[in-house]
Amino acid sequence: MTRKIPVLPTILVLAAVATMVALGFWQLDRMRQKEALLARYEGARTMSAAVPWPRTEGEAERNLFRNAQLDCKRVLSISSRAGTAADGRKGWAHIAHCAIGEGEEADIAIGWSERPQAPQWQGGTVEGVIASGPRLVAGRPMAGLAPLAPPDPANVPNNHLAYAGQWFFFALTALAIYWLALRRRWRGPEDGARGVTRS
Image (tube, helix red, strand yellow):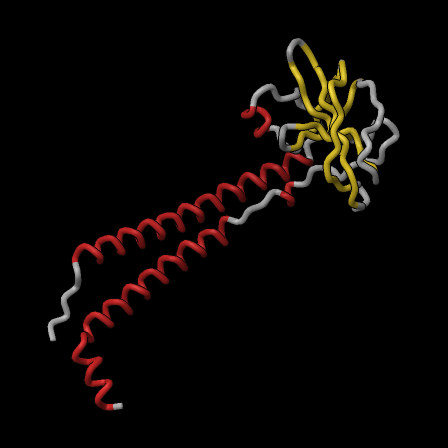
């Protein structure tokens, strides 16, 4: 029996497999980029010099985990969200949304408490570490709160190796399924009938 390979289905499967493999290698490249970024973040933690508060997303990204200072001229609101204290306790982080200049606003994580009730705080100058958002995490808590756990680059996820493995696994699975489909096609109805007769 001639084993003919269907052209169009084969092209479609191989194109899909090639796409999955390309995505796997893209994730590996992203993993290397993230590792370099995390190394830069870790180095930023050792820099004692403060940087100006970032005014753009690009500046915020470049200065994550650096020391900075903000003058909260007016507290616009205070919100509470799940947070971790410096000693590892779980509770609430209190975030003050502040006016810091002409038309400029910023978020300051002023401290931690066991309860979600917002504290009373009138603003002022705060020194701390730039975290994602961006927001400034106060090095010294305000309003009688406990200190928050400082931002840590170790908490930045780097799952790209797992994603790459998934794409490569999908590619192998697609090839295996298509190979089984071809074998079944090549066996044909006659082989199936012989199998029934032998049983």
